[in-house]
Amino acid sequence: MLRRRFLKTVRLMTALLLSVVFAGHAARAQTAADKHESERSDKLTGGRIETAEFAAGEPDIRLTLNVPSFRLTMWQNGKEVKSYWVGVGRKEFPIYIGDREATQVIWNPSWIPPSSDWVRESKGIKPGEIIKASDPRNPLGKVKIPLGDAYLIHQAAKSTDPGNLVSHGCVRVLRADLYDLAERIVAARSVPLSRKKIEAAKRGSRQLVAELEEPMPVDINYDTLVVEGGVLHIYPDVYNRGTNTAARLRAELEASGAQASALDERTLRRMLARATGHTQFVVEVRSIEEGRALSDGRAVPVVGRPPVRKPATKKRAVANAEQ
Image (tube, rainbow, N blue to C red):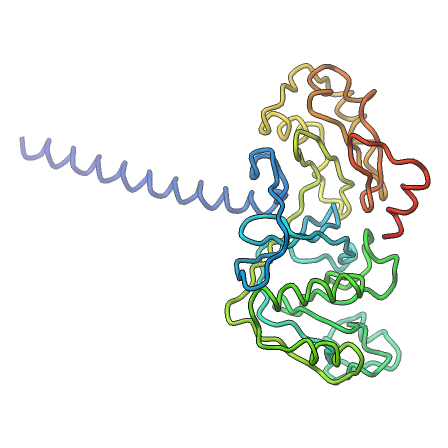
């Protein structure tokens, strides 16, 4: 009798231990999967992204970036307050995918070139030297937001940077947008920096640092297949990670509640083929379910794209692309 009770107890303890182990594995798998899920996905938002006007003194802010969409978004109290088009790291210098955090905003930042091949091959630049903001060799521009491990959000070098792979692992933002982002961060966190000091930093080259008492979360993900607001977006696989496959597209649709069983492999591949270069393929889920995925779907620019339901005129499309 005692032996049977002992064996039963051992079996129960073993089962409990295994359940904990498997639960841990599942949790880690889910966490890993979340790193590749767009923050705009219906699976996370419930099909509707709430927007709000920015409010100074409300410190619950975070940034998200889905690399293939080149879209950096500021969220406050869980609602979208502003999005910006950005440039990201080249294929040979890809940006980090995962969770980062920012603790500073720096106007007129100095630059210390890292010990890397691209720095050593550059003329007039030595790894480890301090290059001031006023030095034309400094590539950071007027503002940088460090994300740790030499990853940065900083000023774009050219107006064509947004929507392109242009940097050495950093996020590039147009100057006006970067000023706007920096000032929103400072205002949300009530950092004691006067408008006068910020404007002086914009005009001059003296460094100004805003210290954030609590780190600001920055979530960088890589999701080329996104159902947002009942609309499928297929973005180009800019880092060639093999994410745009028929199997993954079908799985994404089904996970988002779309009835995709009627879609054959050929149609899925043709949909994927229409997302290339700087162009994404956009189609409503309803059209997919009704068998009109290809006829109703459209190829539109990734950056500066027009609203899905209102195709832009040629004039409007050019204006959007220049923003």
